[in-house]
Length: 98
Image (cartoon, rainbow, N blue to C red; front, side, top):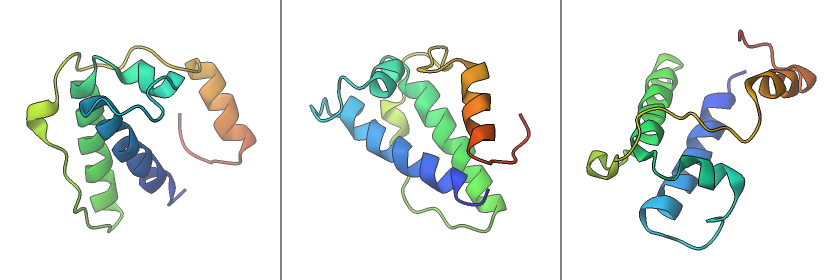
């Protein structure tokens, strides 16, 4: 689906300032909490999304500050299990390979 990387990119940019600037809005949301201490992983995910967006012909103009990319480089804490995420995607009609 064409919009998936754009939506994830938008959500990632919403999370980044909450964590890096200690913003209160959504600070206790499970998805936000799962990225605490893993800004390096969030940064790397952003870079992967930027690469995918480029492959799809989108221009990118919203870089993240790599100096803030600290902590763990791997996201190992998920709100939903991998299996549940796959089921949700299939139920929504996404035809992506998993």
